[in-house]
Each structure stands twice: as structure tokens, then as C-alpha cells.
Image (tube, rainbow, N blue to C red; front, side, top):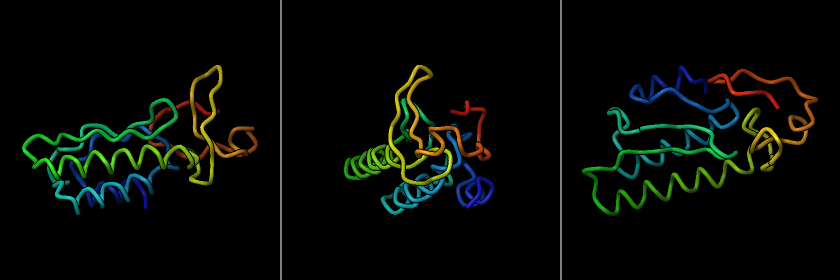
Length: 127
């Protein structure tokens, strides 16, 4: 799935602030959030970004029931945890790497710089 296809499904999404490798995690998380009661046709997703080497999904849960808020928070936490083992650039198995330039979750080849940098949704630095 591309970002354009994701936006067809969920037109109210804010700009994505992460690399392409995490797109499947985002799609899965948003689909599960929709099942939990989040209306993704409204601007409820506040931000989807990379921070400290992890995927962060911030949702406005005001007006939702407590069980819905709990479910949404759990799904966002699961996406964050899952992102720590998925290369943010290519989606392959990876690990969180901490270096002088910050925290990134990269596969061995991207961490070594032996693979080219794929297209991204924003202007994040290459490793």
C-alpha cells in the first residue's frame, strides 16, 4: 500500500512523519482502531511520526467511551512496540540503534549503509 492509497481509505490523516518501512504497521493499527470505534473519516488522528526510533500515533479520544479510549491507547502502544523491530526504511526485521545522530530502528544493511535509502514520506535523514 502506498501513502496515496492510505489517504483514500483515511482522508482525514495528517501528514505522515515517518519513513515508508512503517507504513504496514500504520495501516494495521488504523484498521484495528477503526474496529475499536475510531471514525477515521474525521480528523481524530492528530499525528503519526517517528520519535526516538519508534512509531508514535497520537489520537484525539475526546468524546469516546472509556473502553474505546483504552483500546485505542493499547493499539497505539502495540504499534510503538512493534516498530522497534521493523526497519523504518524497508520494513525488514530490525533493531533500535542509538548513535551520535539519534535513535533509529534499522535493519543490519541500512544500519551499515549498504542499501540505498528508499522513498520516504518526509525529509528524514538517511543513516
